[in-house]
Length: 99
Image: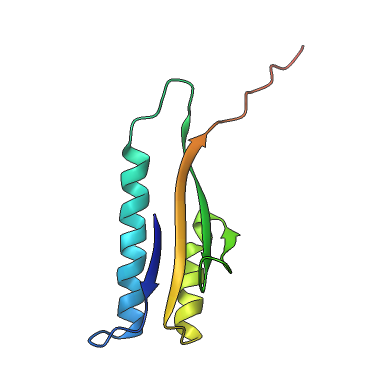
């Protein structure tokens, strides 16, 4: 998902619009996680970037997206750019302990 979200919408309160955006992001992430992985992939991981526009977007963890959206609402930003790209994720192999 590469998208510009508008916070300032004529018929909505900015806080309610932010809730709507957060819900859309959550639905997208859930949908991507349900997709079938290949045999050697453990799970779906995500590369996330957020900012005022695509050029100024900085990398964030997936858990920090909602707090960034809330920050944009508090700063009265009209719109922001969000990029979420799914990638294969791998769990680290467990080391066997020697006795």
